Length: 119
Image 1: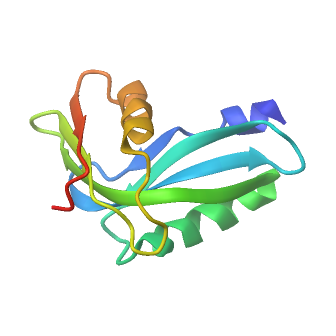
Image 2: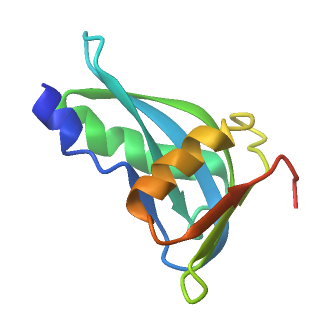
C-alpha cells in the first residue's frame, strides 16, 4: 500500500491566482502509513468543495482522507512567488508551515511565504 500512497501527488494547485486551499492527511485504510498533501483551486467557492473532490477520488485506491485545515494561496507563476495565508471557516486554519514545506518540494525555485493574516 505504500506504493499507492507514493502515487498521490504532494501538491495540486492552480497555476495562477488567489484561491482556497486545504491540507489533507491521506492515510492507507486500516493502516498507519500516511502523508499530508496540499490541494487548491479557484473553482472552489468553499473549502469543503475541494475536499468533496479529493476524498472520493482517493477512496477507490484504498485511501482515507481527513482535512487538517485550510486557508488561501496566492500563486504568481510569473514572479515565482507563492503566499499562504488565512483560514477555513469549516475546517479551521491549516498549519501553513507544513503546507509551505509541501509547496517547496514542488516549487523549489519559488519564493514561498506564509502568515496568519486573513487577507
